[in-house]
Every structure is written in C-alpha cells, then in structure tokens.
Image 1 (tube, rainbow, N blue to C red):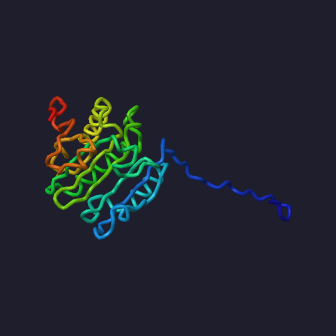
Image 2: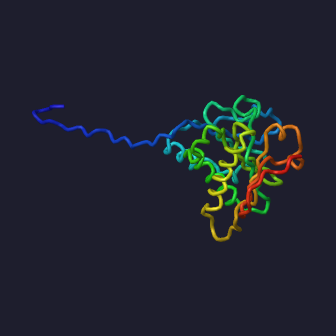
Image 3: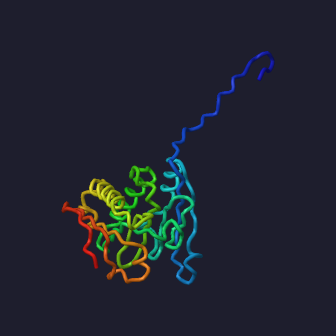
Length: 221
C-alpha cells in the first residue's frame, strides 16, 4: 500500500508446510462407562490426514497405558467403523499382541506407537489395502493391541503384515529396564472365531514368535 509516498512491503504469511498422509485416519475412544451401550460409549476423537495433525493429536491425548481399565483406542482408515459387523471387517481378522499384566506401561505405549506410526506412515507396502486399523484394549487381566486386516483368508498378505509388525517391535527403542523382546508372540485370529468363542479357546490361524523360529501356520483344529 502506498501512503504519504512510501511504499510498504507486506510480508507474505508464513504457512508451515504440511506433510500429507496417503489417506485420512480416524481416532476413536471407547469410554469405561459400562452402564451405557457399547455404541454410545464409542466416540470419534478426530480425523487427521497430515503428519503434523497426527502428532498434534498424539501429543495432546493420553497414551493407552494412561486410560482407565475397559477403555479402548481405535485408529481406523476414515470411513471404516471399528466394529466387526461393517463390510470392511466382516471377513477380516487381527494380529493380536497380548500384554502381560507384569509389563511396564512403557511396553504398551511403545508397541502402540511403533505400530501406529508404521500404519499411518504406510510402511506395509502393497498390503496397506489389507489393513483396516489398530486397536488397544485396556484390561485389568492384561491389555491387548491388535492390527485388524480385511481378509482373514489371505494368509500370504497377513504373514507379510505380521512380519513387518515383528520387525518394528524387535527394533523398537525402549529403556534399559524393559525386558526384551517386548512381545512374545503375534497370533492371527479371524473375527468370526473371536465373536463366538472365549479367548482361551480361539485357535490362531497364524503365529509369529519374537525370538526367531520359522513362522508356521497353526495346525488345523
């Protein structure tokens, strides 16, 4: 603008560069109010599609280990609800990590963050289309973290996904006081079995151990 013969330079606004993710993800929270219906306990926290928005969210909410018992976190591709019944999950399954009660909070939070970064950062290559989301279940008798995939019968893709999860976890940075490896075994279960059986009677379709042994499909029931 020119005023009194002086020309004034207005500096351009500095807009920080944002790094787009390949797709949008939605963070869900299930509260611990057992008096309510499950659907009413489930709330969308936020949908994000940039690296910066992901970290802004992550750094401002509790980690899984800080949640009350019976709470869940779910991070799913935007448009996929975190429930078995929806079409994207109906024929799917999950890679499950059981976290023993004796483990420190650091272990749960490390497993969650390592897998979360791998998923939103698209580190599963061509198998990203098989991944639906990530779930943390905080439970008194031992919490669980699981990666949900679209097709439980696609064993080749599910093994590739499982092996990448294993690599992320065996190389995850943890403090010296943590017993390593930070998980014992990854078990792949189909959602259908999980709905109709108690957890102790579910046969794993696939399993991968933390300590190297040749990964083998579980024997047929």
